Amino acid sequence: AFSAELSRRSAAFRSRLVSTFGLQCDGGRRGGEQSSAGGGCEPRQLRGRPLGGVELDFAAAALAAQLGSLGFFYGQTTVASGVSGGEAERTPPAPLLSVVPSRPFFPRGFLWDDGFHMLLVGAWDEDIADDVTAHWFGLMRPDGWIPREQILGAEAAARVPSEFLAQQRDHANPPTLLLGLQRRLDRIDTAARGEGEREPTTGAVVDPADARWLELMRALWPRLSAWYAWLARTQAGALPFTYRWRGRDAGDGRLNPMTLASGLDDFPRATVPTESERHVDLLGWLAFFSRFMARLAARLGNPEEASRYESEHASQLASLRANHWNARAKAFCDWGEHASAADFVSRVVIKCGSSDGADAVEHAVTDPRRPDCPRSHPRFLFPLGDGRGGVLTREVLVPKGLRPQFVAHLGYVSLFPLLLRLLPADAAELAPTIELLRDPERLWSPYGIRSLSAADRMWYGRENAPGDAPYWRGAIWVNLNYLALAGLHHYANVAGPAQARAAEVYVELREALVGNMLSEWVRTGYFWEQYDPRTGRGQRTHPFNGWSSLALLALAEMY
Image (cartoon, rainbow, N blue to C red; front, top):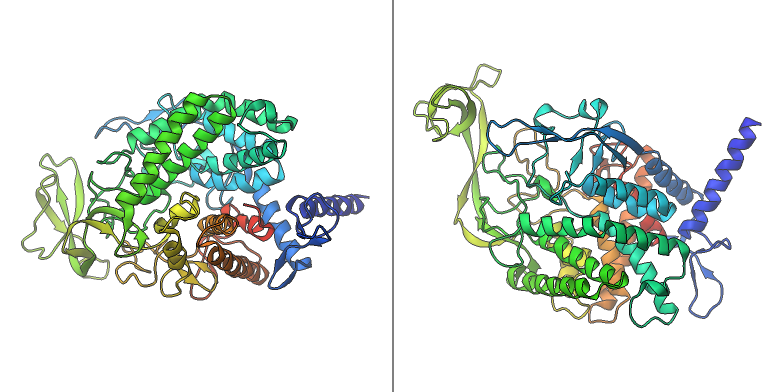
């Protein structure tokens, strides 16, 4: 009886999977797409044929693994004081319902990860996605800040080095929770237009579930507004409607200071962190946010707020073109104090102490016999050993031609205007952005889009510090490849000069990404954190059942 019940439930799960995601023509509510002639169903395909048993097993594994990564946490967040030597603050205990990226390796909630997770969870069960989203907004601080990493409880804290436990008050994270909210709003707007609506109103929404969701959005509106205001205020750049990720530190010991807040950790940014930096991906996220807020305000019947956010959005799009389009590279780029060439030289690592002897830091010097310690720690203590009888050395970057300029390290950041569908379909910048994506000498690989151009001789595949393996420096990441598919799918269905090319590249990318992930799943039984652009092999953390499970939505062509 037990085996029979397992078989029954397994069959019911598979049937709902096929129906919900429209994977086969089986009479379900989606069942692929109807042909333009109004005839039979056109099933989803991969590798030139309809999906079969292996593809359905792959889809079931992606969904089951992600749903199985849903966890409930309760505890306090540690918040850094923001003052040197100050005592960290502990927030009141709070709950969080969250899908974790990897149960064995990352058993805690990550803000930007969970926004991607909710795309798949929401397609399966909208109520669960709404619950997770509401929990995240429940963690918002009074000023609108949401700590990006939720290390709640002793079990979660046990997997995090003590120096990384405290969250920094000025560090942001991409507002990816809006991805699922936007998709829900898209569906509501489409249904309302089908009912003959001319202007967005709540009265045109006839689906009870959609009406309930709009009431949730009305309740969350103050927190959504506070989050946007916090991001725009605390991450503001030197010029109007430019933005800069906070948290880059020239003294972090890396060849290129990390940008952890962006989610793209070691992706190469300006050589020297300065207040004049401007980050194109952050501007993209703010423009995405303002557009969503304008649409939601209109749907909730608040024309004044809709007009305010529409004005913000228009200014942000103008800034995108004026401050980030690099005409020479034909790409969107960061801007900052930067050297486009540099030497990587070996230096000896010494220990330098503060004047009062209370603190010490490591410092790289050319000659340890004449050590030049930094002003903050002027006392030379000793050279560090390498454990083999010699002195410890470290590679450092010596920039050439450092000056304010575009940061022409092309990669995922260059694609954000396409990923978030910010460009009008007739934008002159759209076609070159698609060609950058499709160029095999730069971002294109047979298995998906590289995170950094293979032509980047400074940083492609280079460690950022000894033992700090390259992370966002060439590897294929599923979350941003999924957004690329979503962007290409959008432009392939909107009239414009790049429409045909977007459609062509969309088909190629879906085949490359999903086809390779399927092959790797068959070979290894895992979804991986990232994939090697040279071989297609999965690498780093596995199982990684967070945003890599977006392969199911790409298979189903749900964007």
